[in-house]
Image (cartoon, rainbow, N blue to C red; front, top):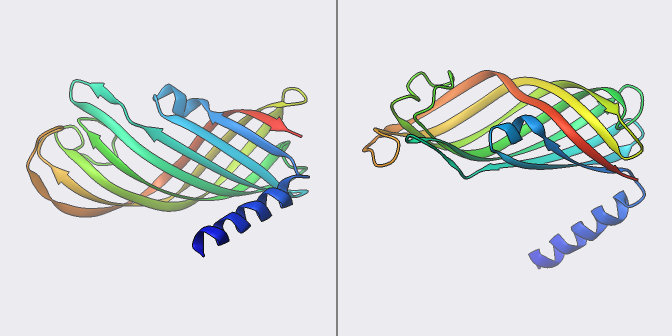
Length: 186
């Protein structure tokens, strides 16, 4: 029964967005950090779009450093002029898992000597602008701020350490930064 419901929902979404604009994108800032990412954006009204991006980093960075993670970030955007063109305001959520060791990121003061593994979730608001480069290509800029909650386990060293306990941390600040290369499908 669940499988049938999922297929019906999938077909409904496909049929309802078939006459709308759809865009696929990659965030070049994530690409620089070796984080694989892909996003899709759907126009749902003349001034509204829904964006869904996924990010995945399975790589060790060498010298016992790692920033492995996956992240999903859905977002609703309100465009001041028209969808996929100009200024927009956004409301986003995020969720994922991480395994970070021997990094100096500033979020956790002891990232340098420990490994943290856990889950994260949060929400934020954003502002962005999209430049139309041609009929199918756009360049998007976005900055967002908000809150992230991390529930994690702490370990002694980056790869084999003894478990030191579990904790939670709330972070308020930058939750999204994007320079996106976008292909608009009409």
